Length: 103
Image (cartoon, rainbow, N blue to C red):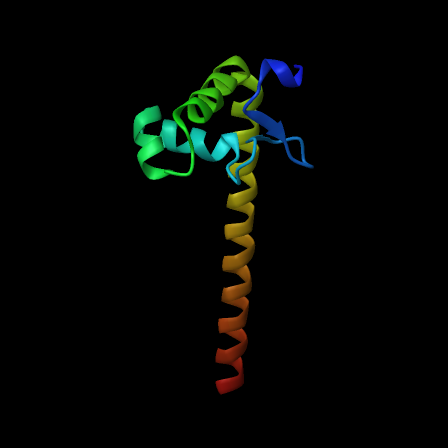
């Protein structure tokens, strides 16, 4: 899509859509929309640094690219799950090492 088609959307270095001139990625706002069932006005109350046109642009961008965005959301969830497992494993290993040193 051309930049004029999405005046509020730009892409970061990983090709993830974000709201132009802000720190917010479209996927972050989308999670709030989907998980909390927030509409644009509720999202705006939580993010006073964003305008309603920016929020609507993020939601419209999502619905126009839903399959791609759903895949990215699933990929991020998988990455978070892997990090949780890796972190838990390191913590468990550290606890076991401390326990062994006490014995």
